[in-house]
Amino acid sequence: MLLMKIQCIVVDDEPLAREGLADYVNQVDFLELAGTCSSAIEANNMLASNPVDLIFLDIEMPKLSGLAFVQSLSNPPLIVFCTAYPNHALKGFELDVLDYLVKPVSFERFLKAANKAKERVKPVLPAEETEKEEEYFFIRTDKKLLKIKYSEIEYIEGLKDYVKIHTSNGFKLALVNLKNIESKLPDSNFFRVHKSFIISLDKITSLEGNFVTLGEQEIPVGKEYKDRFYEKLITKKIISR
Image (cartoon, rainbow, N blue to C red; front, side, top):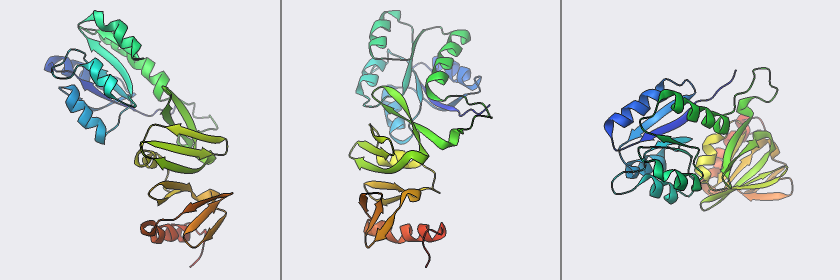
């Protein structure tokens, strides 16, 4: 079976609660602990440089509660609330959280929440499946995960906090920056030719001056990207010296 780890963090102001949940995470083979945080503010700083798939999150914390933290995120990962206060459950589910665990959390209940995350985030694929896991990735759009096949991407356009992924089946909008999307793409087939554009090298139909054409779409090649772009084309034997 093919399985990718689900990156997660534990956020709780109580040290024993953090340690207990971290231990639970380490016992589940498809979870990977990216870190622990003692406050929502610390978690917010961590997410800025290290996006994750899943947060196990306390609610009652000083300065910024777990509820307020989730509401502050423009594109939150999956959330599992872990709290001693069951009266927050309704508000939690209004925020579309994955699960709501009441402390003390048993491992059995934790594992049930983890399995929900596995179904939502990282699908397990049979080894004989013709579509291999590395042939696509997932983006979050409109509160759901959408599969994007590398082979269908023509180019990706950065629009401030959004990206517009142009594919052979139309375009998709996602609330994520271009740098984050770039990290999901294989270097062998994609190249950033401009501060606002990443292109599929396989979809190039012509080159002229400071522009590259993909089908009917003309994309500018930025001055600072041009030399490395042409070296890439030579390396892949798309053009010769």
